[in-house]
Image (cartoon, rainbow, N blue to C red; front, top):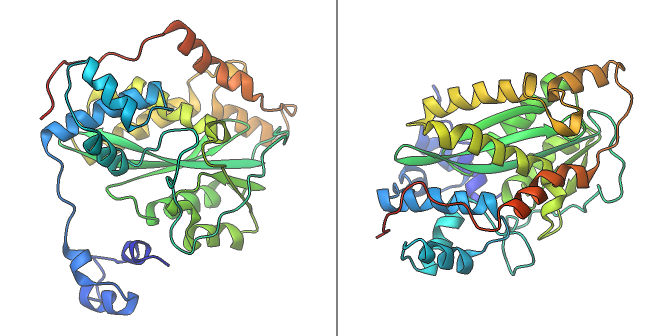
Length: 316
């Protein structure tokens, strides 16, 4: 177990055990627990939002190309800064690249099990992913668990750190409410390769599948969820803090699950499809990866240029 994972187990509000005692039991240094992450400055936060907008539209962009695109907008920043902010945001460009999206030390990598698999029923395959959410003068991270057949979001959690705990919390909530899938698919991020996360899946006798490096199509449905959430809600409303973003995301997720028509589901809402398929009211329907990708391909054809910033300003 990594030091980061051990720190994630700390309970700052524990009635019986002090932080000092918990650190001793978990074998972590108190300095790393008491030291809070330094807040990003306003220029960095503005730049992070713009990087996220570019990355949502063109997820194959690396730091070098993002620097060039920012320069075209008269935002003069260096590659080291962009690379550091991308690491802080937890985003990695798609495509072959050296030593990125590394699992934690000692974490096991599982094979990708979905290649050529016909996915035609709910609870056959679930997937999970993490994204960055800009808020006021800071940012948070959001994890979601999704059912592939119905595209329904089964659980989600927000955190101010990229620890394993909030991912496990979302997974356990989904399992408690919706049963369990046959296969669970994620990327190779350290949160999902951790022994704590994979241990929950193994205990439930769920097969574990992990994307190949640079294989952006391996988790395409949840990537499209992030794009919809940000462009239809987060960027429009500009949440000020964690309380606002949790309430806003909860409202949008409820709309997405229960009301928002989905083209790939014959304009039905995801949770409606999940419920009816589970009780046998809907016949099995195979997941068509190219149909899922079609809106993204259409967008790329119709929009030969990258998204424009809402404000032109010079980053320090």
